[in-house]
Amino acid sequence: MNILHNQTLLRHFYYIYAVLFILFLFYFFSGIEVLRGFVDYLAVGVLVISWMFSSRLFKMIGGLFIVVGTLFTLTSGGSAGEIIGNTTSNLPLLLFFSVLPWIGTVVRVGGLDASITDMIQDRANRVENIYGRSVVTSYFLAVFLNISAIYIIQNVLRNLFKNSTESFRNEFIIKATLRAFSLAVIWSPLEVIVGLTVDSTGVSYFTLLPWLLVTSIIVGMTEVFLTRREFRGITIEAPFDEIDSRALRKSIIKMLVLLVSFLITVMFFNTNSELGFVMTIALIIIPFSFAAAFVMKRLPIFMRTGWKTWKEHNNHMQNFSVLFLSLGIFSGGFNSSAVPDMMQQVFGYVDSFLILILLLIMAVIYGLAMVGVHPVATLAILAEVLIPVLTPENALSISITMVVCGMSISAAAPYGINATMTAQSMGINPYRITKMNIGFSVRMGLTGILIAMIALIV
Image (tube, rainbow, N blue to C red; front, side, top):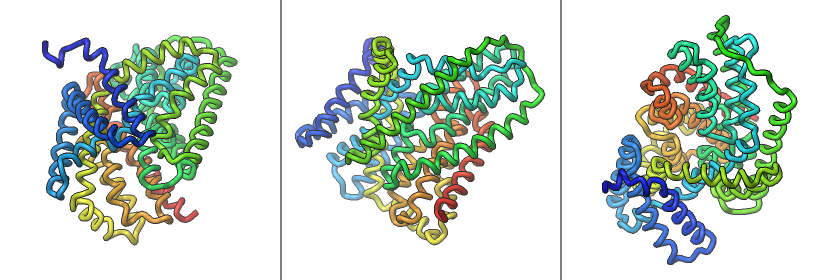
């Protein structure tokens, strides 16, 4: 039987990742050197198997990272063992992505997502009001459900707009969900790009948080104001379900308590350990989710739903495995090559002008995203390139720009997971999404740079 069509393997792919993560955690906390070799070679095996089952786009990106990273390492005097060792450098990121469904399950089994979606409706079915409520709803859900929030809200809106024309429905859904997602996750500790930036620049997440929140609020209010005007005077045909205001308020309070509790937990462990931000979040998610489900008295259904969701998520994690593991090979080889020095020279030409550095960061992130390079990969590269120009004075400004630009382009990047997932569900060309949202992405990126310059002065 062709391995690519082996349904038994596809249904049990999570075992492969579970073994890798367990072995990695044993090595991480014990420091037993003999385990390092097992982890390295197992990571290479997982990369190969995941690559076979990944999408064509990620096969190309992963293959390119592996080939270029290998050439960089070998031409710099490195060995094959060094290439294999580089594969594991992004395992904390992969572990983080693997356990994300557990926090999303808490939100779902607690009934929070179902209650909050009631906020979308408008008694008079005015599209401008539905848009503002859709953005707010998507925003709140995205904080915890991450990419899952896009799927949930898009299904709700698809049903609500089922009597509208397909082009109008798609335009509304694309603008309401993908833009809200970018706004919500720029400050979420669950976002990989936030964690990667914190670890690479050394700026505390809690120093970065207020500036990201300000950016999110300003861009969000501007976006709702501008886009609502596009839908002014338009109504749709849709039934209105009466809302239990008391239950809705209770759900929102639950969500806020959950968010504050999680941030306090992250702050405590990040301050009192040397694990690194991404690793701290990855290790906290599961025990925190279990504790939250226990407090909500939803532990049994949480365990059943969470286990099923986690298995399903990890059975389809091949694309991100290829991205993160091959990125480790590329980053390791890239860092040992002469290319960082060349890029550093380019940034060095403008190191006296912070605004030019920030604009250059934005241009690199946006430009590479348009040809399929994930912002995570771009930021990993920039983390090395920016070392010579990174100072205690400008580190906060650079961090703000990296996060905001890295996430703002997700609403318009044709090969990003958000746009790809949306385009596939709608049966449209992903460049249509780029056309609709690129203006928003540019506005958000430039606003982030403006806030970053203000942070430098303050």
